[in-house]
Length: 285
Image (cartoon, rainbow, N blue to C red; front, side, top):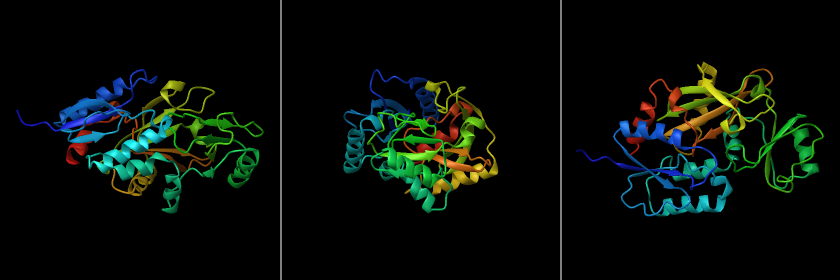
């Protein structure tokens, strides 16, 4: 039997509240079909990685709750010369959402964003004025799964968990509740598929744990072009990428996030069920 390269997928510790196993199974099937042997390793304590041919942080969910531990892991993997995709410099860059400023500097349309070092009433008012928006969204710069993300109407008080903390302030984009949030997927730099994620009634968060749902979406040429330009702006070519975008009041798309660490890939919506993903990972060996 030919040798199958060993791939370690980083996963949450036991007891993590979100269900990651079904999506893990889909990715494992795609990787196995490409000729790879897959095994899970807890991201916060991956153990001995000797003999592992490739490390994928695809389910390092919760890293935003232990930022020091996450950066320590990246430092360890880099120092040990472990093969990781996406590459460690890309993971480190993508961990903090100030990368949106890098995208904007490359003339990639992003959701307007103001970074505040310590959020208080005055800095919130200043951000509201700079953005020209009454309704805002505030989020941690290092976050995932909408942790610490709040929608603030005009005059609303700053939530206790955000007061005095470093936060990103953005306008509430009308497209989120009107049309949904679009996600485009790129493997090896090539477009694969797209979905549109819609929040539950009365919410603005599109994640499944908040009642959101997704359906396949035929991405427009404008969306595919915007997504490709965002992917090209990364510090190194990513093997896998999810580009989240949303429309403004006029329907013009803006990048909300460029997900290069642990994105849900919705492979069950891909026409090839993830074959291109598997090939891209194998080719990175």
